[in-house]
Image (cartoon, rainbow, N blue to C red; front, side, top):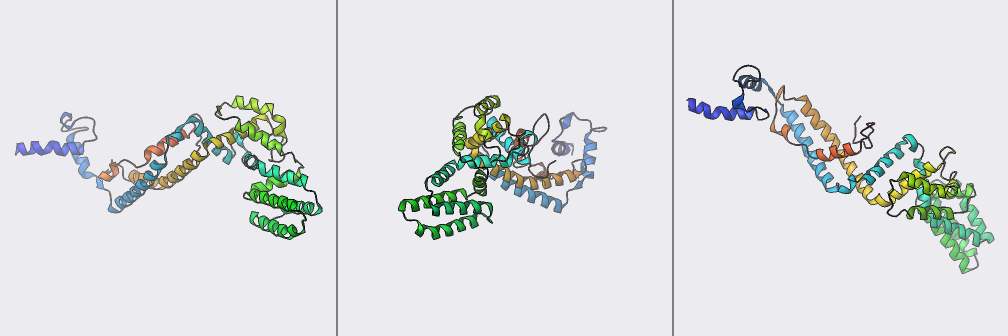
Length: 352
């Protein structure tokens, strides 16, 4: 009998105290932190209800699905310093924090202007070169339409209708080709409402020197593999071309206070980073969207575990399973939180 007891007893105690630091054979039989105390505690705890366990396992199933997707998207590039700075700038610009306040829309306008510089230049050259009465009437029609159109689809439709009426009245093939090209460039600009807004602003402020866009574009392209985190070096570059930037102040909606070398440096730094990391950022954004979906069942699951602490409940094996995706969550939570201020540059959902 004693032999049987000795054989089964260690197994039972070992199972009950596998989380204890002290081996069962080195612990007292009676008293504080004793084997008897643990046995009494073990058998006095409540069991986790079937409904709570069902909900817990359902959330874990969802976590596994989202974690698998997140692991497939996650990339070591996302942990590089320059990329993380770009991610943080995105957040600061979108939320208008500190020196980034009020810059988001202006930056979007500048980026669209640079991307569409060839369209602006071609439109300007056509307006300067082809000055017939019919052509000038068409240019005037477009200028008025820029100020009063419902949306970009309506703008395109009205331009095409007026162009169809006008084409038979233009005598030369060269003139017709020029108007057709003009309309095509307008169509390209109208792919973005910001493109049409910019063209209207250029005309409103009578700034026909679109070559300044090319100067800024070439400046950004010249950065190449340069260290884009060298803010002081970028400021020096902007100061050399500051007159060019100042011409765009009204066009991109900057106040006099905002129109300074540091603000324009933030803009070219962001655009250069965007050019360098655009594809990676799209994938990173996909990852964050998956993690935001992951976060909801994660909160629910840890909530269920918190409601059934080991001090009061017998812990089912399911409660001891590692949380799928937790390593990705912890990694980006750390990387995208300012350790000094506590500011978070990402919100997985419902976090304070």
